[in-house]
Image (cartoon, rainbow, N blue to C red; front, side, top):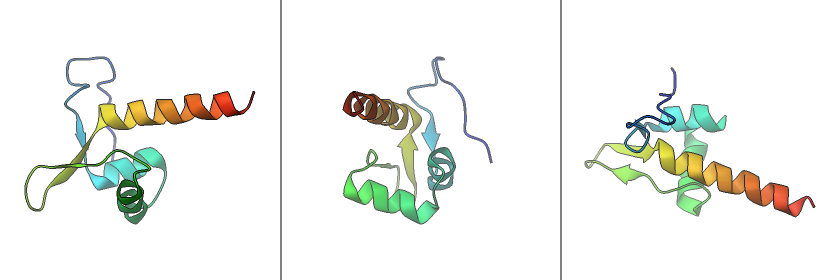
Length: 76
């Protein structure tokens, strides 16, 4: 499974990931993705229908960049 890479293209804002793709991106198990979303440690998913839930790739990237920037700031 691969994660779409529309980093700077017009699809970057609308690329939606499944729970498995988010787990792959973060290097965790799918259950951990649900736990992280529930605790607010990653952005909340978007519910497209009763049984379809996705995460915006751009939201996850922004979140991870803020976490990295915060970690760098703490190490000074």
